[in-house]
Image (cartoon, helix red, strand yellow):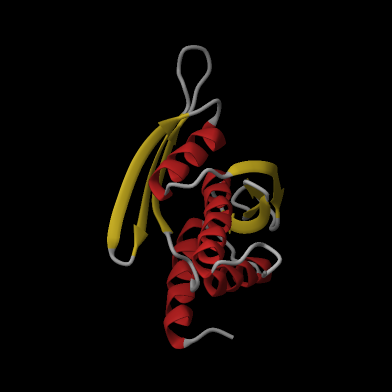
Length: 166
């Protein structure tokens, strides 16, 4: 169940997805609703992500734009790959030191325009949190999954708890 505000947001995301894809499947809808219900507790929201990657002398670069309480933060970082680049950019913006300890991608719908689900585990010191996100763009899904872990870590830290709730 979604409250009216989250329902409207999920519906808006559905319309955007429907514009991108020829068919929207039940799994697509379930992922949109799941993401929206998780987004309601987020501290930071990913509003823009641009990643440039390459081989040789071209270093992968990510420019990330986050919003928090109406304030926009933007940062750029280089990394060993596109995922490493956006992790570094997010860490700089939110002043955390998360390290992705596990990362996997899976197609959850069919076709060339399939929704990809990113599953990540992120370690913050002695704490390890897991996150998931979906998108037709696997880099975006990966960044959202990482940011989901960052948000939960920051909320736990602010509440003086650890991953076990203590």
